[in-house]
Image 1 (tube, rainbow, N blue to C red):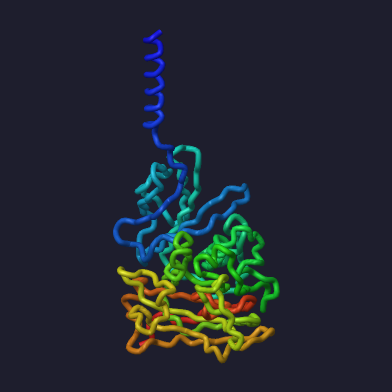
Image 2 (image 1 turned 90 degrees about the vertical axis):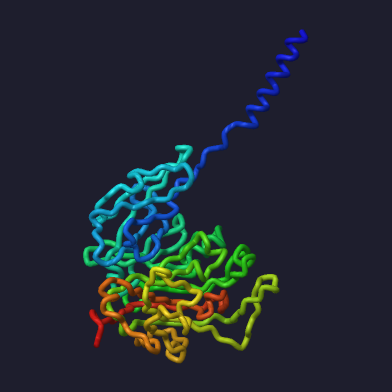
Length: 390
């Protein structure tokens, strides 16, 4: 009996010991965290887009790689950094022809989860220079509109970025695209149009001092992973542009909201009303040099007068965008910064980027504005010169 009791105790101890040293649960994540290309051919970090739901219900996550002009896209070997323990097919560093998009399937370490990525390569930069805002798809699991442009054959060339993903993160209950800050409306100057509305954020947005969400649309990308930590750095402006921009034009309508609010971190809702201030929209563009140290600008200093990368800007005169319920034409010339010019060799090498930005509240990047301020934009055209005008 004594030995039986001892044996039982020993088995219990061994069982407890085994439970303590059991293997940690396998990782369930199936993500591509970053992508690199050998040979220093990328112009900027890879741009990860929102999931696209295909006709059969499959979710595909688009990724765009921007490479320097002259890069041989028929033989590229992307180096993929995956979440811990995940695997991918085709394997990282596999040489593929990227004259067409390539599909990658990532499987989690535990083998239970998969994510479908579609990687495309852009070697020519911004191809479209006329924007009618007729094309949208749903992002964020069907919550909000993503605007995109197409070529003459109807193939997508690029997608615009907006703060919609951040608004979705701050207000997880909202699922109607027309209640987001950036969406497509029916009553355009011709056909449909871009509509931007400044909105109040949810309780999560207030908790991180981001109570106001300006409607916005821009050429670039929005880094959702870091949006609640540093929204300005998460807003990245620009796409490679191989011509010299001269003018931005189009049509707008604007109605300011009733009450303008400043950010007040001491207030319960983080807002302080400014009754005598009227909200204003913003329409502007930036032409800048992409450097190895800083390939893409962000909202922290994209318009700063002392930013050495900025070559020229086209900024709407606030006196020219008065409130109106009628479609009104605007025309904004690009103005060179003092001492700046375009280097023909850098232009030919694809070393310049262009950003176009629309916002319903001019102080929206500082989480200030008037809820309800509405800016409608349609039939925008970017005028340019093919080469440097000596």
